[in-house]
Length: 448
Image (tube, rainbow, N blue to C red; front, side):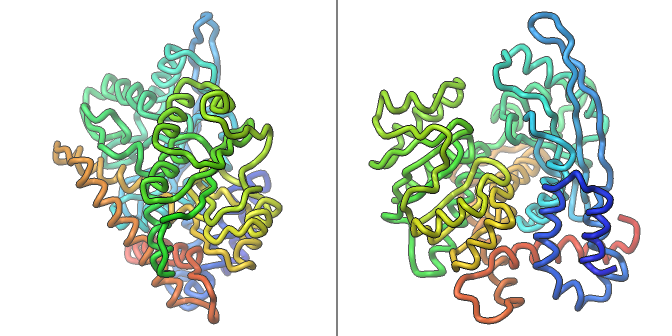
């Protein structure tokens, strides 16, 4: 069966899963040549197998709110592929979570984890539970209830969830406590725990820092660096603020952050004091707009950050936040580099616009792999019951991101079609990640 036939079959089976279909198509169009030239891939139906999860666990979550009312949510865990190691991927708590979103994220996670070079398979999970406006007690009750349903399907050598949108250290700690209570085991089953009880230093910073380390390597290919560059960042969560923080450390001027309500623009640029204030503001669920009263700048209600002139764009908020119109704005405003800090923040049409105008583009599966890379390092630390220093882990993160960049660039060069003015990191990352997972499946035969 050809790749196009696989896609058509998936479209027929899952017409209401657009995010998942979008992710599958993006990989398919870039791996077509290597797929057609390797008879084993077709013989063993590798793409068909990688586009169908090993299993999807779906369950109801009952929990009690502060008023004593019973609430009901849905929970999922999509265990996509364990060809390269235990299932690994985050848990997302957000009202937009559904099976399509989790399948897209889990599918991307296969190749992202493969690119790190660490022994991790791909998975994703979460719930349509909305943590916003909930008390700490309500979040604790929900986390306990969620892991009560999921605990029997995860384990340190089976499936190791982590955090994602709506799931930070607090939520992971609650879930780990319940898992420990139910199993009577103290194991590395969840990553993103507190440092004092199995967690890893730099995990909070890893995704944002890692995206900027990847960007550094992109710039170095062009004999350039971040010094003096103007940067637009979307989002104001963990990834966004740490990406902004690291870019500032390396000499860039970060002009924007944003959330679902609008964009905060500071023409003078953010500094560490301002970033720390933003972190505290978001931690307390207070409006970004209050920044204006303290530091100046402007608040643009209901708008996105891409209207300002800059050198670099770091979309770090959520999937499909950048459409073709936004991408054209980036081009018109002199953006030369787009690095995805979020998972699939550009629509397929936006990617086409960026690539047509020869903007250097790094897909999320490569650029935002820093978070799962440090999660993998946390798994290693848990296995040997040891901790590593922040500096040591930061160096390892830099090394992993450099290797991901170089592997993607090498694959892009090897399989490039024609003389492209930019490194085709999208093709390179997809091919490098796919080959690692696909070759493992071929070696296993039909049993995985």
